[in-house]
Length: 250
Ligand code: NAD
Image 1 (cartoon, rainbow, N blue to C red):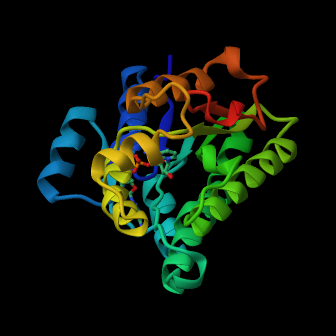
Image 2 (cartoon, rainbow, N blue to C red; image 1 turned 135 degrees about the horizontal axis):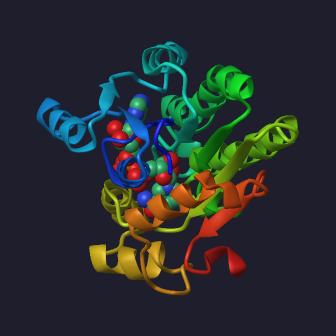
């Protein structure tokens, strides 16, 4: 049902973004991939998804602008690229703070700013911001990430109000823990920060607050993104849809 629509998914060479790109492609959308990765991997993904890949560092404004220019008019914008750093506030590297705010929040603002004129011109669009349970609640040692994701949720509500009289919707999807490289890669830092084993980090830290004690799959997020593109989702806007195993129900 998405034939003729172009979807730009930021950070789609891995994890959740890749799964969303696959799900949108399966419904017929033309997909534009973004994100880092080995040339061989990117070539394989472009072939699999019949997609273009645009290389750009989205933690820099010029990178976001270059991506949107190269992508061309976008009907479905998924702001997914994100990064994490785990450290106490007083030891938090200031350049990591700047980078996380730039990538997880400012890049989404810039991408929306540049994509909305075309969506308005055709009176249809879908903005899907991949936030986090950390857009609704906090955890220690993740100050930049929690601040950026709360900001992304606020940006999304504002977009929904500004666009309410158009057929453009803006929503957040907020996963709890999804089994991706981003999660796997923060295990060593958390082990060091808290003096725990890998198994303890998984059961007592990562899934501590996820009552189902299970991870969501990236493809589950892909299905929710597809649903948000359907006509049936026209009246879902400004929402922050949790897929967090009950985390934020507590
Ligand atoms: P991931 O590390 O697997 O993928 C991140 C993607 O972003 C990759 O394609 C990477 O190349 C790209 N990227 C990183 N820095 C970039 C930059 N400067 N410029 C352009 N692209 C860049 O991560 P993931 O787990 O799939 O996370 C995707 C999104 O979902 C993030 O916004 C993350 O905060 C959010 N999220 C993830 C989880 C989880 O459990 N994995 C939970 C909640 C929210």
